[in-house]
Image 1 (spheres, one colour):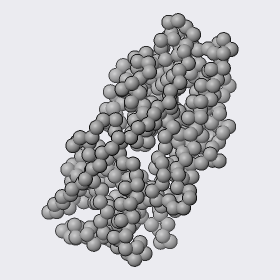
Image 2 (cartoon, helix red, strand yellow):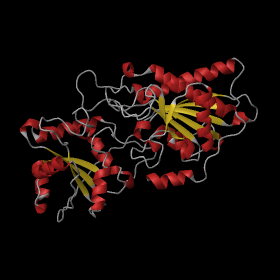
Image 3 (cartoon, one colour):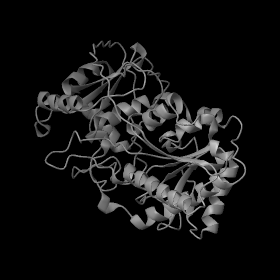
Image 4 (spheres, one colour):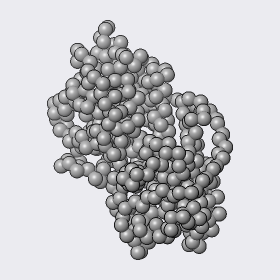
Length: 426
């Protein structure tokens, strides 16, 4: 979301509340469901004037609040009363229909009272103005102030009490991780394993689109990673057939449930690993390597990849990556733009490598960055940069080759995970 002119991920809002001395713990959050617009009606948060996911995807608002990492009672989303938006009741029912069509939240553990996600309700401007009566402000006045200042408006509404009742339906859903193992050739080192991973799930059917084209195909996220894992596996299998197979074993892991909370990799790492996690020397995770980031700031837009993890966990694995890049002649820009637990995007913890990292397993997360089709219907195969994806896969193969054939395993920095947690939050 950093491509937007204004940060809409909630961080600015919560920073503004903290600056104003407002503690939202245990309170209801009242937020506007639309976004600031220019005089011609176009959205001002995006570069092209199109509506952002803040107003087209209701979960973005809830996720922004959950990202604040403080407990809150629930969220009220203000939906306009104007005739141009259609009757409020009809729009509220449409939103409810879209929500009921979604699969909901998933967890590896049975739900309990503390796992219930806060409720989100759509309310009219008339209702919201009633709640705001004691503040002397109205929804229209808040919109005008936000539009004129391009900054969040926060306030604590005193003297208002809200209660709600939410009914929850619990169900079980079955899915599969897809695993392939190539056994190492060394009689001792073959008991150690390198995991090369991607996720093959995506976000499903759009709840806002109409017509025939409603499936989010996820060509980049993470079709590109899944295909790369298969190609790398084929190359290693061919090497083994040619008599020059890897000394250590390699586990090629395509997981499900990444988009619902890294569930597939959590199941592998925490519940049923094929090889004990302690015998895993590293994880090379591939998630979105088929496109270009329009905000890339380096000097090789045709030959780059973001690497996350690397020297923050293990200087050795970072050096191996640099060496593979140079000795193969790929000479890719190994950008570390997002390589920090303080990165506001939190890419550091947003893919399946994180479930290996929490067990002190060194990892490199390979990533091309987000783009205008991220988690959208436009993430289609014809937009993949296949040449660049191939170069990234070659780099990962070369790095993996070194890891599985050298004498020692890369060492992780002591307590690095605890430090990352402290820096980036839980």
